[in-house]
Image (cartoon, rainbow, N blue to C red; front, side, top):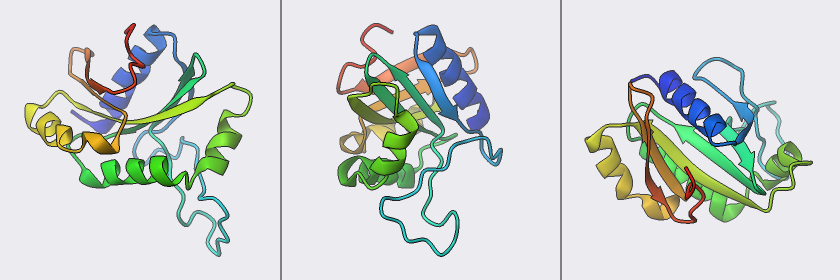
Length: 152
């Protein structure tokens, strides 16, 4: 299952559950929003920037998704760093200005593959949620430490 399909399935599922999509990106599409590191004195325009796969808001909560077509440890590390160090908070706050967001949660979207999900479950301390999707467009919540998908 390609990353684009994973992102589309998750976008549709979020919208069906009343999440407002702020931005999204498909691999190599250039459609996403580039977030810059805080206090960045860049000499290159996009150096250190990241493009989230999906950012959505609902009920004063923002979700920050990284989606992959397989388990990819660097995304878990990246989300943990963003979450723990708040090193992109200026860009995130600017993007979410006007949405009355109190909390941002970080998670991963994957294909419904036992191997990839099992590997991901070994990294749960780095993220707030883990979801998967399949070719039938179904979404499964594997981990939701804050109960943000309790009504989904």
